[in-house]
Length: 439
Image 1: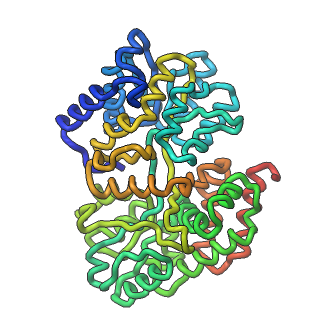
Image 2: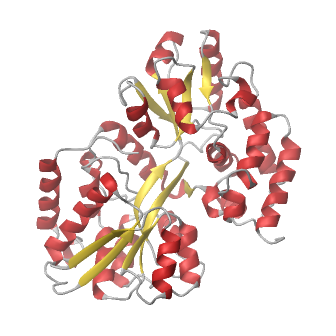
Image 3: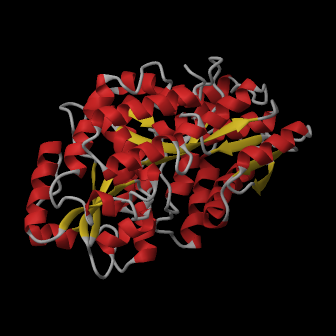
């Protein structure tokens, strides 16, 4: 899931530039130069390999400017278990970068996190849209998190060859999308490749349509199960998906056939040597799959457009995900690092290396390594308070993130029989109520 990577010279130049420009709080560049000399900051995150090296470049710039010592540890994907053991043993890291707001809330409930100090929270207020501040705030009303990285899951990737052959342009509205799909189908190619074997892709479909149909406030209520999944907004969303997935010759292999298609295959179906469809919907990470699975080139033969406007005025909506940095110790070094991570300068170091999108609205978009990533980041920033975190990630895992259960299974059943709108809404509500303990 990485993008274009610049050479080491460009990375070092970016590090040096930011370090030189990190002149202290009054200049908006994080902690003052040399202000953390003698401090050691232990940092844990899931990143390894190329992502670890890119994040290390950010930490190196922090070290160079503040004279702190930073030690990074990769926890692997099971960060909750690793941190749980460290907390229980009384030796948590100073800072951890978490892949889900749910984990942040769990740790806050345990009393394991330290709220941001005034300088760090001030940097968040200055550089982030209000929605990111809300996402970094736990249920106790305290601000704990600085969002380091974001993902845009509101993109439709298409084959430029297929579009040219059919004579269609990237659609901006839902009606334009339906017209384009029909025209592509008439050209002899299935319009859509749907990864029905991976239930999480179907939750992303639902979330993007629901956010536009129901609006951000109802999205938030549904995420907390404050409204039921039998609500009319849910049924309206399912009806739209029913008409799309159930359309004649719309989905490659048909709805039932799509149930055997895994995510990577859904991408290959569009960009492989033997294309079976013209469009695949998913997040910015599709670019990395294209690069590893086909000869298509992102930005040339493989391009994307934003999820079409389902409802007038909702076109800036973005569903996404991200990684949030939190402090497990109230140390000068921990708070200094969080303050720094909230600056645009810190984000621009990673942006220059590729494979990264920042939710920080003050980041200079020209710092991104390539045009596709720049456009993806722009969509995230311009969505402002219409950005919403992946709804399934905000649910209890039994409902929102378990293979063969909950949302994943119910929506897979719906894909196989996309006419069952009312029954599907009832099944979703039954599964949600079970996961929420009858609430």
